[in-house]
Image (cartoon, rainbow, N blue to C red):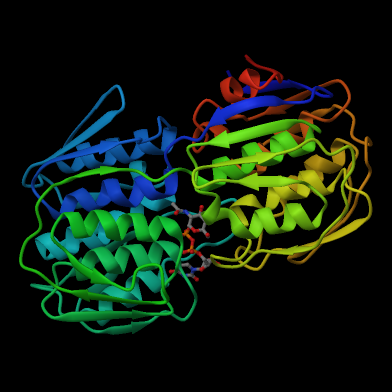
Length: 417
Ligand code: UD1
């Protein structure tokens, strides 16, 4: 089931619900390594990346079990402190086991994540953070070896705002001795969700959601229960699906407060959007204007919605300038959108999109990464004819049942061999 066939031209209509956030669930599942016993989660999305995380946790000696909406992780004393290349290479976020294992066991061996389609994505800031807490880091044969009898709190100024780096060091600092201060910490809502779970486990954290996070180390943490936050990127993608098809879609079980930058830009383009605390609706627009966006750390425009927004701009009235400041190689969807008839000039980190309202036509295209595949599905929803999106497995890493959700809104979309 490697391809998705999307028929363009149908307006989406109705109500759809958001799943749990992949990017919150991943660090939270890794945080279980900090406390022995049974951790209980709800709203963990059923995704390939969650499966990869479960496999990695199991390789370390944990047990994981999904029963309906409940996801359990039973952590026993680890049988291994090594995260193997075969598991890490499937998902870069696996590096998030480094902080918890090192902090709890005094030693961790984690494969270096390999290259990634959307840029080099180094882990130097994760490692600098661990060093600042007293860890000795060596790199040997593709593996990071980290050791410290007990981590010691310190002040860490992140040179670049890093979501994963902030999460990894925050987790490590929970069991360090003394106080850790993270400066220029990332402020993404997923970091807040992780901090809230760590606090439930007994960690002493304050300032999460701001650029300065303070962690007072404790001697021990205990397992707890948590409901994973809604996926803001999925919610944003579904809202754009309603908009681009000139439909009217209500996205429920989400937090519009986490999507202010997207909503602002969509309103600027001319869409009418109504928000409540946990739902948002985009109303039918027969045409919309081009607007410029620049991706940047939260609360500014998320890089994970850039590709989807570009699809929307490819059928807008006028010219839009899309600037990508987070990842250096995140325009791989551009050539595929051009195959569908879009008029886009990509430069380094900037793409100029000359909108062609009603101008897209179906073609076979290739998904290159997770968010790029979502953008191609969105473009397919408006391209005349049937668009074949190849390598759709990328989508399964991060979107739970996207085709079922879009079909429930009236889209004609199916998988094929
Ligand atoms: C996370 C998200 C990803 C999102 C990204 C930015 C997860 C699982 N993934 O990825 O979906 O697109 O945030 O919002 O939550 N950097 C370094 N050195 C490091 C770490 C990062 O130079 O050690 C750079 C990266 O190359 C990038 C920037 O910092 O240019 C931001 O990356 P980061 O926030 O760390 O992204 P991830 O945590 O990998």
